[in-house]
Image 1 (cartoon, helix red, strand yellow):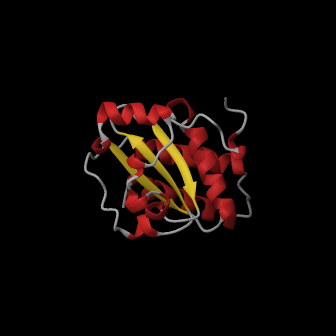
Image 2 (cartoon, helix red, strand yellow):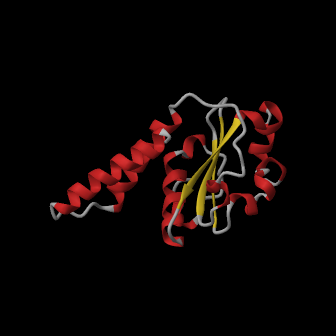
Image 3 (tube, one colour):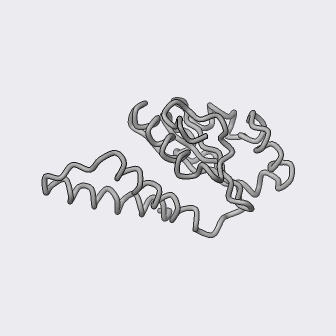
Length: 155
């Protein structure tokens, strides 16, 4: 289990405990907790090994994904209602992206210096919210330059 998964588990336990006391957490507080969890995850030492794209997480639909440069920590956040391996044939994202900044860094560092993270979602609303939260949390280091509607106001 990654530190991000551990952080999310702690957030879920904390929010459950708080909500059992009758307190409803605002979306803003939950987004701040997600930022903290994602920062903890980014602070882990990076792995340069390419993931095994046959793992179930890469073949599960309704996901948000991040493609992170392990050398400069820049990150691309995306979402798909299909699986990652359907969105990018066999998971080969480096062959099918359309971001010039990402392409530049890909040629500079090589695809082995990028990591892919998958965040499973239950529905489109959760997928939209998670993507927006991750883009907002990483805006200063993001390859994303055209904000999704849920992320407007950052540029």
